[in-house]
Length: 431
Image (tube, rainbow, N blue to C red; front, side, top):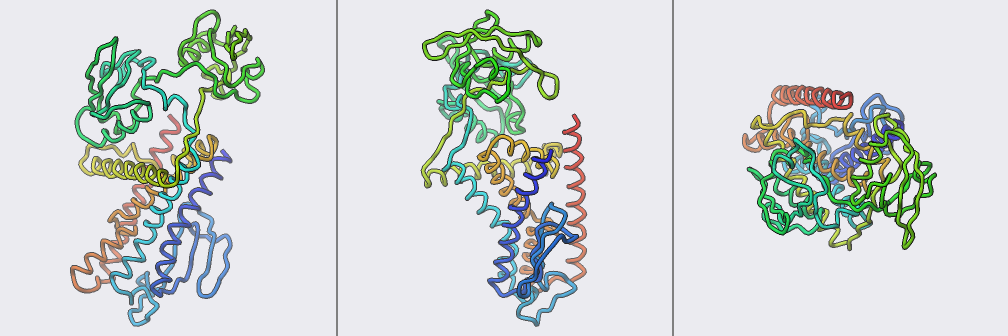
């Protein structure tokens, strides 16, 4: 819990800092007086005034703000050259857009760094896409996938690895209609159709990739570690049952229901027999022995990392607008939205997993923050930009009363959205 809270505050503070820094630098560039720069919302924890700007750290770590003189109706002064209200429409657009753009730039820098310094991912993702098993009553089962199927094409794109499969599915999920998948089965090809909605909504498809029963990591203090098992060991048999796939290990461990297991392993050219005593998981539902499959670190040259990062962000952006379109047309569900509680839980889990995971997640959240702030909702940067567009079409400034009412409506919509997503988050955590 402590790790989750600290990780959430740190990640959100970094994202907010860059967002507000964009507004701050743009305002200073066009000569607007900056009164306050705050990370967090009031009440204030501590701060210091340097020149004409007070720099603050406030107690509610769910955002931040830059207070510009003249951006509020009460201190507008079109005659003061350093007042926000005195600037041209183009200059005000520049200030407003700078915050979301800073988040988009940060997302690209971070995700490119992740691809450049290395992404730790399951080793099976670079292996041939062969299905080990299919769970009943799942999208994969309903589409007709079977154990042993080797995926050849997804939506017309040839796939040689599981990484190729996931990338092709992500792209195909943005189109309409079933996703065509070609598989090789018993020496023949079969054409199957996967439910596009299930892929677009990130539902579990129900197939399990074929993973070799090779130990990638042995958890410290685990039953496997105490039995002498090591990374690189191949599980050959458990209680006399031959093991050919990783998922069979869990099946045998759960079937034993806590009884001591006789495990035969291959280590180099040797065959060893060890006794392993499974333990209950923290939640008390499953039995564990403390091993996990292998992982691989994928690194890329700088230019390729930037290209991969840009492509990944573009896919996420397309997916985001696809989802928004589904919501607006009534075909999407608000249940899929996540708020601060869910984001905090995901960040905490990523922090416990590793540095590349939390960095990748930071890039994704920064991208979403930039996109969300550009939506034409009054009280957001995009709402202010929308009002600037109306002002430009009108050929003159909007009345203070109109802008004030628009802000109130926008704020009410945002508060309602926060309540809905927070309710969804808490309900999801409870269930």
